[in-house]
Image 1 (cartoon, rainbow, N blue to C red):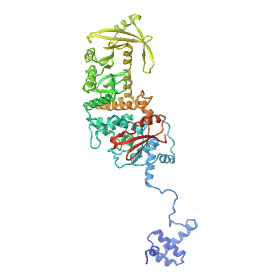
Image 2 (cartoon, rainbow, N blue to C red):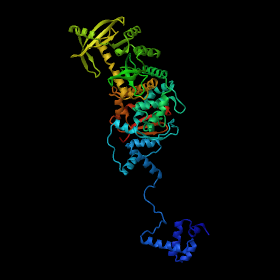
Image 3 (cartoon, helix red, strand yellow):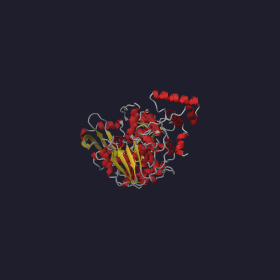
Image 4 (cartoon, rainbow, N blue to C red):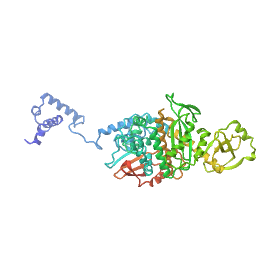
Length: 582
């Protein structure tokens, strides 16, 4: 007998056998005993089968499970059920649609934002209320999701696409490449491994600094963002434990050599003037501070256990040239001379002016600066006797001048310019007393520049206050007041990475017409804090930035870098375009 005939005579499936038995009995009119014997039923069980069949016919359910009724629409996929469950789990943690998509992309789950939105809407979730940055960071820090292991990004295979919440940070890639900063990092003495080489390691720290992440331990979102990973040439950034382990391998010599290399680059690019501003900042630590000294904190208006750091700043470009956290009370007064040694050892042409606060050094060291041919501007401490002497000075000796302020407007002040003698300085020195209208105590500028115009000296010292603004920016935007260690070397590395990030923001701001005076926090909010979609092909990395009010300005600035290749991304070009969504 043929196989196709056997299929109907000897069915193996239970429902198929029931169907053939009932058909033979009801349609072909064979006896119950004959059908039962043919299909392997007892007579009683076959009568029960016939009885149940007739009941279902009366209930208008004749299919009896014999046949599968096809369902219209897309076939169900069990994997989508798992994806939907993940989406709902993330939404319960108050994450928006774009962040949910970033997390799913890091787990190689590629779904559209509209799909995520429909799943959320289907399960009855409403729109999230508008939240500020602090609330978003607080929510993100509570999310605990396992992230993939960081490894070098394999771009040899060509195409790839994903979403990221950090698309704006990628705008720094062509700047880093065009200035050759990546080459400085690669040639530096910073450590690396086969898994994550030196360049990629430092780029990991830069990615977090540029993104304003202040607590690396809240890592479950940033270490899953493939955009930040792409910035460093990795699939994703490594976890917080890696950052801690890496920073413990850094020495002060490594940081110093890297700062020197950067300064040579700034000098070659014409970004350093003949003047440097210096100032101190206190980096507090909330823990075991028995080995730390007390330093004055202007933010808290009191003295507290902290690490004292010094920053060197160029007043024209805003570039930070120097940083050191190894400042103790015993060597505090030597900081200006150490900064000068840093420049001399670096092979950069000598500075002409040093501008700093009165507590920076002693009068004796001022004499040493004069012997080195360095012009200095600093503030003299005002004693009671000095104040009385100035108050008794005839008004005719005070001169009224107009000085340009930081906003470009002129300001009228009164000055008293004269040559004085300081015993510890052991030379004549120029003192310019400054006062305004009303009962304001005079400020005393002392300098060894006897020829420069009074207004220019006042203007030059007034620009020193820019470094105070810069330090304030370091504390708030780059979170120097939230470092997680009391180890001076570790904090010194954190400060060096902060200097790198700050200078990248300055270079970026210079490309934005009308925004070059803005601080890093303003630039971040207006331009960098933006998500988008990344499409990678054989030749280019296409970044589609979400719609934003200042998007045209950033696209215009990035157009000048279209031909720049990014070496750590397989020498691909990076192109920036505007997306159709916000």
